[in-house]
Figure 1 (cartoon, rainbow, N blue to C red):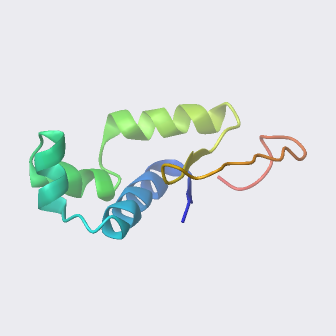
Figure 2: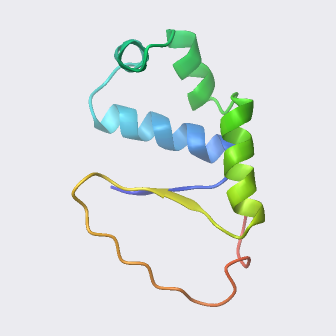
Length: 87
Protein backbone atom coordinates (compact mmCIF):
# COMPACT_ATOMS: atom_id res chain seq x y z
CA UNK A 1 0.00 0.00 0.00
CA UNK A 2 1.23 3.49 -0.81
CA UNK A 3 -0.49 6.81 -0.27
CA UNK A 4 -0.33 10.15 -2.03
CA UNK A 5 -0.32 13.08 0.35
CA UNK A 6 -2.06 16.25 -0.73
CA UNK A 7 -2.99 18.92 1.76
CA UNK A 8 -3.20 18.80 5.54
CA UNK A 9 -6.16 16.42 5.58
CA UNK A 10 -4.37 14.10 3.16
CA UNK A 11 -1.33 13.96 5.42
CA UNK A 12 -3.41 13.14 8.46
CA UNK A 13 -5.44 10.52 6.62
CA UNK A 14 -2.24 8.95 5.31
CA UNK A 15 -0.77 8.80 8.80
CA UNK A 16 -3.91 7.19 10.21
CA UNK A 17 -4.05 4.67 7.35
CA UNK A 18 -0.37 3.74 7.71
CA UNK A 19 -0.65 3.54 11.51
CA UNK A 20 -3.62 1.17 11.28
CA UNK A 21 -1.88 -0.93 8.61
CA UNK A 22 1.08 -1.28 10.99
CA UNK A 23 -1.27 -2.46 13.74
CA UNK A 24 -0.33 0.44 16.02
CA UNK A 25 -2.79 2.35 18.22
CA UNK A 26 -2.72 6.10 18.64
CA UNK A 27 -1.46 5.57 22.20
CA UNK A 28 1.35 3.29 21.04
CA UNK A 29 2.42 5.69 18.30
CA UNK A 30 2.37 8.60 20.73
CA UNK A 31 4.59 6.69 23.17
CA UNK A 32 7.02 5.72 20.40
CA UNK A 33 7.44 9.32 19.20
CA UNK A 34 7.57 10.75 22.71
CA UNK A 35 4.30 12.66 22.46
CA UNK A 36 0.83 12.73 23.96
CA UNK A 37 -2.03 10.84 22.31
CA UNK A 38 -3.70 14.20 21.58
CA UNK A 39 -0.70 15.09 19.39
CA UNK A 40 -1.32 12.00 17.24
CA UNK A 41 -5.05 12.74 17.16
CA UNK A 42 -4.36 16.30 15.99
CA UNK A 43 -1.84 15.13 13.38
CA UNK A 44 -4.33 12.61 11.97
CA UNK A 45 -7.05 15.28 11.92
CA UNK A 46 -4.81 17.68 9.98
CA UNK A 47 -4.45 20.08 12.91
CA UNK A 48 -0.71 20.66 12.91
CA UNK A 49 0.39 23.99 11.42
CA UNK A 50 4.00 22.96 10.81
CA UNK A 51 3.00 19.83 8.89
CA UNK A 52 0.29 21.73 7.05
CA UNK A 53 2.81 24.34 5.92
CA UNK A 54 5.31 21.69 4.85
CA UNK A 55 2.77 19.93 2.63
CA UNK A 56 1.52 23.26 1.28
CA UNK A 57 5.07 24.34 0.43
CA UNK A 58 5.64 21.19 -1.62
CA UNK A 59 2.23 21.59 -3.27
CA UNK A 60 2.92 25.21 -4.24
CA UNK A 61 6.18 24.04 -5.84
CA UNK A 62 4.18 21.52 -7.89
CA UNK A 63 4.94 18.39 -5.86
CA UNK A 64 2.97 15.74 -3.99
CA UNK A 65 4.41 13.75 -1.13
CA UNK A 66 4.17 9.98 -1.33
CA UNK A 67 4.50 7.52 1.55
CA UNK A 68 5.66 4.04 0.61
CA UNK A 69 6.44 1.05 2.81
CA UNK A 70 10.08 0.34 3.56
CA UNK A 71 11.53 -2.15 1.15
CA UNK A 72 9.14 -1.15 -1.63
CA UNK A 73 10.47 -0.38 -5.07
CA UNK A 74 9.36 3.02 -6.31
CA UNK A 75 9.19 3.97 -9.98
CA UNK A 76 8.27 7.51 -10.94
CA UNK A 77 7.07 8.29 -14.42
CA UNK A 78 6.87 12.00 -15.15
CA UNK A 79 4.07 13.11 -17.41
CA UNK A 80 3.11 16.64 -18.34
CA UNK A 81 3.34 19.68 -16.15
CA UNK A 82 3.95 18.78 -12.48
CA UNK A 83 1.68 21.64 -11.43
CA UNK A 84 -1.26 20.15 -13.33
CA UNK A 85 -3.87 18.12 -11.49
CA UNK A 86 -5.96 18.54 -8.43
CA UNK A 87 -4.76 19.88 -5.11
